[in-house]
Image (cartoon, rainbow, N blue to C red):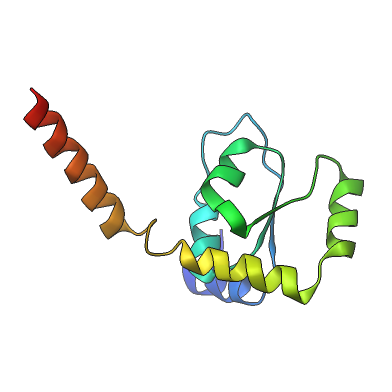
Length: 113
């Protein structure tokens, strides 16, 4: 595994990130990395990715040929829109926002009982 500094430099050098993950996974921290860096993400049909990444996700299909076609069809406008969507996810997916939502949920649960 690359040191954190090297990994971050590599992420910042990308125009987009590809996530060819399938239904066998529960989650991936790479998604949070894409959001943190503001990377557009080419995603497989695994529902978790499109749900969590929202408009920053660019679905590519299921096969290598689908991925190649998606890459061929990408333009700067689509990548910029997906990058902006990734940046917009930073605040709602931050540790602080998640902690606030969790605390509110627990408070509501305790108040209801």
